[in-house]
Image 1 (cartoon, rainbow, N blue to C red):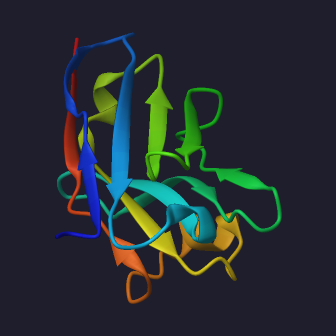
Image 2: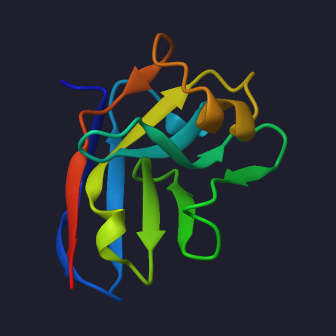
Length: 129
């Protein structure tokens, strides 16, 4: 069973909204720092929103400010990314990561520690005009 699985991606019209999910198995997201990232073709991975869970501070990358919101569902062991006002430049593969909570959200987003914790394979989000 894959530890982290993203879902909910798809096609959305410019200006629309979408909520994508990141479901965990075999470990509890409640005790991890979690973050959402994206990677468009030919571009580097970009940290969007990261929640360290231990300092109460959620870090938002520039692309995510005022448009993206992260939330945790401890009952379903799932993390969500709610996105609004989507534009074609938001087209990318969106993925999630869960790492030990010693990192701050800013550190996790700016320097993704892909050698730690668990990382999903991603879900495609395509925004058309």
